[in-house]
Image 1: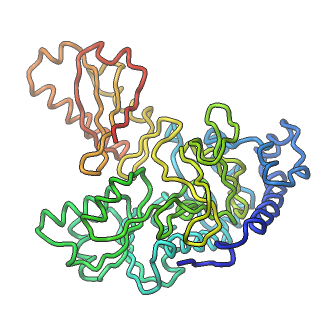
Image 2 (image 1 turned 90 degrees about the horizontal axis):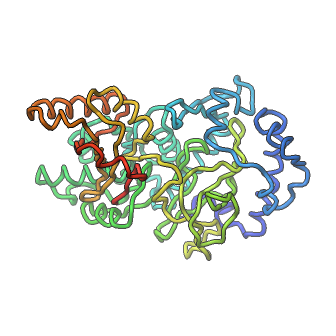
Image 3 (image 1 turned 45 degrees about the horizontal axis):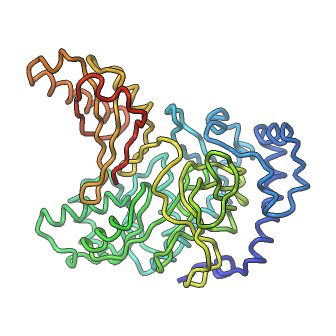
Length: 428
């Protein structure tokens, strides 16, 4: 199923010509209106008139999260504030947010991109779409909502703030046919079904579109088996646009980039040099239609690779493999993102904690869990058990209140972790 045949199956030669034309317009816009880019281009002696091919994009400087934080809140906007109709945000490493602005045209494009993603997974105007992402400064809920309405589906904005039994009641009563959430939330729904002795066939679900956290083929298989649905992956970057950046078609063989709106590169995260198709590296995106918040060669920190060859679905757009890792130490658990430094700030407030700790991310029945191993002073192990339980409870509560993250706390003896150079361990 192809939503927009004009662009999704456009011949590669025509698509690349469209990309370079839109890139040139974007470069002129950011040079005139965004101080960061004028400074970067001037410092690197970039003459934007010389950027005439897609290969030439490699001459342009990268944009990083640090650049966006330093420009907070509005210095990255390329239009007057009166033309911004929506602001979303994402958090940086220090917890300082990054403000992202959208014009009316940006919102229109966003709706179109998400519509393509939903349609490619088989969602149509006949579906009842239950959106279990939070509607907040995070782009997920709103972006998916726009796209579902664009294709004419019936939208049920249930939000993940509702408990699972409420979600299931909504699914049964409203005959939900498509679920959109994080994959871990879908597994929570499957688990609750078993607990209440209900069968997936009692629901009308047939499709699930999941994102906002890394997930594997193993988790896909579990979701499909436990909910009796087809599960599809989608990929979004808040700073780029949100959901709609890329999505799987019904072939389930890579995520199609909407290349009429984005130019994608894969680079070596150490050298910044472009690497060959099929090799794993860091995803870099350039927006070529964004008005309010255009970004040039934005380093996402996500690790993936470009898939060679054309998809059997007929789309000519390039595909990437699912993102399962990052170049930095960002921890993504059940749709929530947090940097270790944010957790560390919480831990420093707890009496008796040594300055050595380790974060272990595992998958239990397809659901990600976070264990924090903490060194504590010897006195704590000599004290009664109630003191340790009280400290664990205190830390758990502080983490939940200040970061939203739930974690298992494990105390270890002094000097157990002090020589360990790897702060975050993945055992997915």
